[in-house]
Image 1 (cartoon, rainbow, N blue to C red):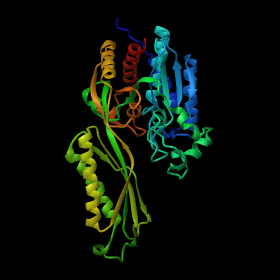
Image 2 (image 1 turned 180 degrees about the vertical axis):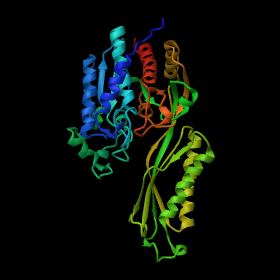
Image 3 (image 1 turned 135 degrees about the vertical axis):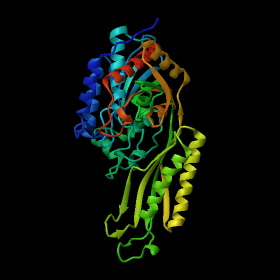
Length: 412
């Protein structure tokens, strides 16, 4: 028998705007970096929501909040959720909507169908973005799967030169207890997220089922030349790292364009030293973010980029070095969980498509210890990582209905 799940649009809307108050910035924007006061207040609100819905609340060693509903037959847990930290600035929906979706779906299932047979949980991960710590992507989910190295918190530094360990201690967390966050009792993890791209809007659909998540590599590239006077030193004698950096930035873009969709490469951060208008810089440092979901094409894209780094060093007579700050392989979602989501969408009467994710998510980390799949909901103009990101309540509710129907199939 098909089990239709009723989701209250007013509750979803209240949750979206309530959570966005913590770190509210520039009207629609949100600045909520991990382990800040606004982050702590937002996590406290999620914990209260869970308690009010009758879930047992647990804060793990990294500060993630878990709300658990026990199952009458026990077994491994079925979990849904996402993260509450944002880009700086970010919007109301990236990550936060997935936490809200997990909470609303489990609360609705409890109210309409009673206790589940299998344990159900919602998680609000403490961090997924690298907005405060450049090397801390997926910090919370990596802890859950036991992939944080000993002393990593002591050596990892923020953009403001704080250590992760000191920042954790500032909010009452003990970095020595990070291994306690590891879990081995999660069977399935389903994450709802805004799409962060334009494909659903182009297709005129509210929801997509995600069957694969891209691989991504983040580089920090440093171009070292020689500082000289901007007026007196001849152009043909310069060792100008800014010019070489510009050539590399354009080149990595052309590499991705030449490979075609879904290859992407982005330079999002750049700094020059010294940073003055009348000085040829000594050094230019910038980020390169390269992604592709196909393992072979991903490797080819990375090889093209690194060959470009070497070629531009020779052409511009500068030194180019690079470090890989993050390297996450592609993730193929669990086919059975994907099928459960597709079936739920049909039964809930929600039109969908099946697609790959061009962004990285906690789900691909969780895949190390559980079955994973994702749902996307439509994002206006495909916008994300910006205060302008927007998803209608109607589309959010459609996605939560699909999520709740799938959780019902897996846990009841």
